[in-house]
Length: 487
Image (cartoon, rainbow, N blue to C red):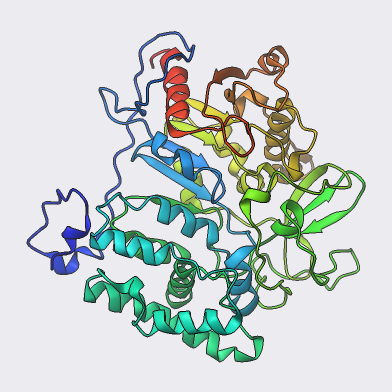
C-alpha cells in the first residue's frame, strides 16, 4: 500500500518512490510578502473565508501560543504558519513522563501536532493514525485497568490499531515499545498510565531515542502527512521549569502551581540559600515532580485567585536559581522571514510569556524587517494568572517582559547600555471580541501606538462569553492587512 493513500487529497509527484516518502520532509510553502489592498480596517460581515493567498503568495504567520488556546483557530493561518510552543508545561500526562523519565514537556506540542493532522475520511488510514495518537487512557481507570489497556496497545492487540497499515503500525509500536522499556528501567518510580496520552508516549520515546525534540516532531509530522511547522521555544533534552514572582514577594514554581494548582507535596526551595548554581541546561534529574495532575481545562474559569498579581516570570534550574536559556535559533530566524506575528489567545503568563522571556527575542521582534503586523488576540475573560487585568495590562506585561533588563548588553567601562523599545515595536494591533469581560480602554491603548480591532465571535454555551474562532480571526487579520499601506 502506498504511503500517499494516507493523504485525503494526494497530489505529490513522487509516487514512484513511496518507500522513502514517510521520511520526506513535509513541504513548507514559501514566505512571500503580502500585498493587501488599501481598504478600511472595519471588520464587518459574517464571511467564513480564511486568509487567502495574495497575488504574490500566501501571507505567512508566526504564532506564539500554548497547547490548547490556539487549537480552535489554527485554520485561520492557512498553511504558511509557524507555531512557537513552550516546553514548560508540567501538568496532565506530561507531569508523569517528566517525573519518571525527565526531558522537556511535550504535551502542548503533541496537542498542536494532532490538531494539524490533515482531514481525512473516517475509515482512512490517516484517520486511524490520528485516533491512535490522540487517544488518552481514561482518567477514571484504576492503575490495573490503565496498565491492561496500555498492554493491549503496546502489544498490538488493541482495536485502536484497526485500519493502520502494518508498516506504519510496527514503526509506531516500535517507539511505544521503546517507551515501555524506558519505563521498566525505572520500575521503582511506579509510572502511572492513568490519563496517559498515547501521542505523548510516542513523542517522548522519539525524543529520547533521537536525543532531539525537533527530530521527534519531524517524525510525528512525517507519519501523519502533516505540513505543520512547529518549533519548541527552547531546544533541550532536559526538563524546563518556570517560576513566577508575585507583588508580595511570594514565588510559585511550575506551570501548574501558577495557573491551576492541585494540592500536592512540597516542590523545591528556590530561596537564595539553595545549592550553588549549575549550568544553564543542567536541569535534568534532580527536580522533584508531582504525579499525574488531572486538571480539566473546562475548570479554568473557576479558580482560586493568586495572593497578589504576577510581576515577573523566569526560568529556573534544578537548584531553584534563575537562568536565561537561549531560544531556539529557528524561532529567532523565523521572526525575520514571516509576515505577521500573532500573540495567540490563551494563558498569558504560562503560555505566551515563556516564549518571550528569552535572550534575543525582543531584538528579533522589534528589528524585524519582514513583520508587517504584530497582533495580540485578547482573551475574552481573565483567569487565575490575569485576575483583575484590563486589556492595557496584557499589552504592558508583554512589553515589560520583552524590555526586561536581561536583554541588555554590558560594554567595558560603560556599565549597561539598555535599549528600551516602545510598545508599538512589539504590538501594532490588538484584536478583541465584542462583549468581552476584559475592560478595553480604546483611547488609552491607541495612545500607546496600538490599533484596536473589534470582532464578533460565537458565544460559548458554557461561559456565555464570546470566543475566537477561525472565521473571526481571519476576518480581523485580513482587515489589518488591508488597512496597511503597500510596500
